[in-house]
Length: 109
Image (cartoon, rainbow, N blue to C red):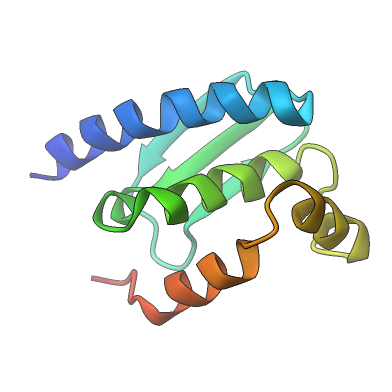
């Protein structure tokens, strides 16, 4: 079942990632899906790689898009400072709503 979730999530993430790479003018060299205990995603700006939590397969496409955008913005601003929030506000204005929805879910299943 986890393998299937991973495949489905890859299919969902790929076009979202390509769309937002163009919008944000960033490039990801590698992305992967894996089980994560405490995060919905993580980014390593230096290597331009992003990891997404397998549990995202169980949430809405809007929340998945939010996590994709969030991680891509880390390529522009590695921390969660005011610049990061300003970029998120500019490109994905409803990000705070998505974040609240995801925070209600328990990803440690």
